[in-house]
Length: 623
Image (cartoon, rainbow, N blue to C red):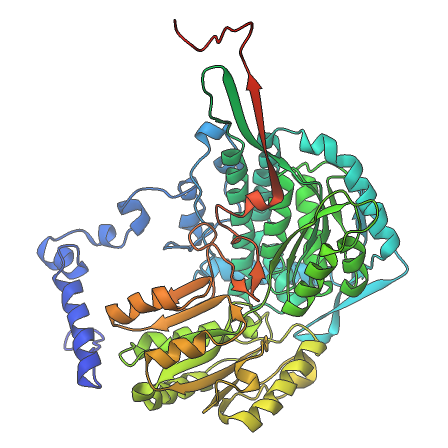
């Protein structure tokens, strides 16, 4: 202070037991041979070395980061993506030398340049609002009399665009074109199909800020969530391209006198029916998996996100997807969906959405109609009623922000979102007090505001549904916190983020998927009851546990039966390859997206056995 420097005294305070754990962690960190203090004051390591990007001081580069973009846009784990990196960095190579897959880094908006680029992208996109978007069938643009008009969820008076709406006639044309294109695409080498995915990934990287800006304005997704969605779309393209190269490798099990070959072939025409909440990532994932496997694809986006889907269609076309192989067919789900699902020439349906719609698709696909040759394969990712357990020794500094991020991220409009918080009785009051304080500080605002945590919901129907559940919740629990959006409710589709306490496990708001920023806090006496309540719904998608107990963590691994279990972290934000995503029971059917079992669902395996004996002579046998 005497030298004119600012001084901050940093000291923990609070209950003794959590404080002891905190102090031990600090001691371990600061007495480590690799600690900053040791290197700075004992080893006299230069400051520029200490502040260097950790990636440069560990294992060098990761999956193309060495090609320049990261340094300009900010460093750190999963940060600093530069969409303008040289194309050569991701040019596909032969299967034996394809670079190892690494997740696409997210953009660091703490860097001023990135904030400027995102704001500029939103301004450019806003200048294009109100345009009309045609269907694309067999490479041709098709306009229709029926249209979908898409407002900006943050400002319903602002029209983002007008989209042609397909009907049964257009669906029939797309299916016929896809069927005709299938034989040639089926016989296209897997490497060429994978190259189209890799080239599409490059297109998305170049347009990263633009695509994120479209998400901000069309579906009301805040900056970071929109950017992460684009990064995940790139991940799917890169990952499934590599997976197809792996699956295309020959599998031989020969014996003397006999040649045995095992390989995969595509199924046929695939209908991709995608949701609006991850408008680029999920649509890209399902579409790219079907395409690279050799199926021809009809891409049916959600009506709320059809403009973003049109941008993806353009990216695939720019990357060289042949005419007839991929079709863009937006329209009302209740019209276009049945026309695709029930058609005899559609061999595969990949769907992400609600349980009710998914079960309807599954039932329709099971009915064989005249002219049908294939038993339809259905891949369906459905909903969840996901719980986080707060153990009696949980670190509340981690648990409170983790619960809020899991429940309020993208306004709770994720199938993986937390909607139930199961808190052990001994820590209930402390947790609820901390949660209330944190929830009151949540910023509600338009999605284009970079500081927004909770934006609008996607449309008026979603708003009205959530408001109905809030009325039910007032009868089933006590309102702990409800953040009023104020005048924003007159401008866009905003709802008040709400936390209910003292909710029964049997309450409606504790059992039904709400798909909004609504948390039900449930008191449980011990871990036994917590696990029983967590497992009591129809769903099994995601779940979480905050605990310091190794025994409780081990037990949750065994008994907390969900598709994706997260321990001491938020339960949203699964990463392709690292955390393949998907559930079971009423949360869906099929293998996990972004994992090694996903692509074979789009394929049929074949075995060919040939006898190589000639006149009693087996050339492989040595005499």
